Image (cartoon, rainbow, N blue to C red):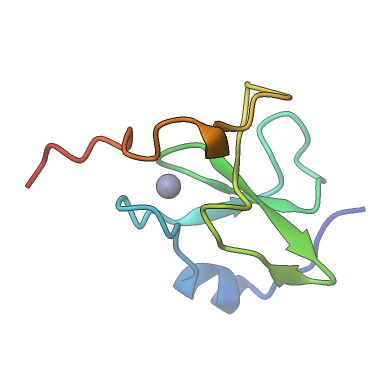
Length: 82
Ligand SMILES: [Zn+2]
């Protein structure tokens, strides 16, 4: 079942990571998934009861199933652009 997010809402939503990139509905693997995927870093955010959960702690890095990076180094997000 595809998520039904308002296009206008999608427009103002942005990835909470430093890239602040726009989000796309679905995941790369499943366009109908109830999730939002960052167009920049590829993090996948769950959508619960129609509400996007835009938390880095909740994000899943697509392509690495079962390997949540929550326990890894949290400082791996290309922070050398300061
Ligand atoms: Zn991002």
